[in-house]
Image (cartoon, rainbow, N blue to C red; front, side, top):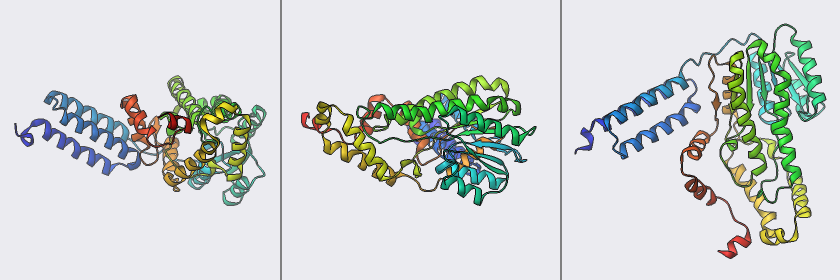
Length: 377
């Protein structure tokens, strides 16, 4: 049979054309680009498997529907000085987002860990009077309660339109067996319990405005990555919490959106002094047999190599993250999930649909292994 005369092949070519046209006309090319690539891969697989014309028609209809849902109605709602609370605004995504929303005309409440720190001072100097800096350590219920009171005092009857749970911390990237329990608990306290507590405190205001709850998770909340057992576990918990809240809050008209960024360069990584202190803490608390199995050289080098690898792969331009969060806040019909960053959405799909053994094989090739394991092999 001549492949070029096959109805399935021509249908695949037509589907590719349609995907390309929709992608080119999209107002959010970054998000749709990854989705279009995934669907194109699906079509390639359909062609290689020589599926029937009926199956290809079914796939074609599904592809068009999915991209239509993703690309349709990207109209942005008017700002009208809508009020938005952003946690973790001292630096990184939160700091840049607070500035970005202020420029767009939003009334911004920038929650910070240290209201006297350089990040808070920078916001006060560079932003308009619409922005208020709030002392808000998300692990301290009394500070959340105080911030809540100040928000109500400021907005009065205008309402709170959105809460962006962005505050988060990282840990020394190393094998999960070596991460101290204190680091597991600290990550969970900030990245998960902090977001939950902020959500619970401000939800009555969001229900009143039928607004938005935007939780900044991570690609690692879906994709298992070595050396990040504590961090990724907290983001997985936040992702699941967000998914359940999306279902529960739909009856109130509140939309819940998850942001799962890929690799972006922010100062969440911290300083060398910080990491060296954490490394010393790990070495001090490890049993002797565990140190011998992993070797001190491995413990001292693996996290440094990992951070170097992360910095090399991270994008210093965080514009895609800001754009997607703005879309989550302002779009008339936002997507329930945004995955800004190069290949972030593809990694999520790869983990979701590839065989577990194959995914593990690919990721295990990226990272080193402890000395004892390499010797035994």
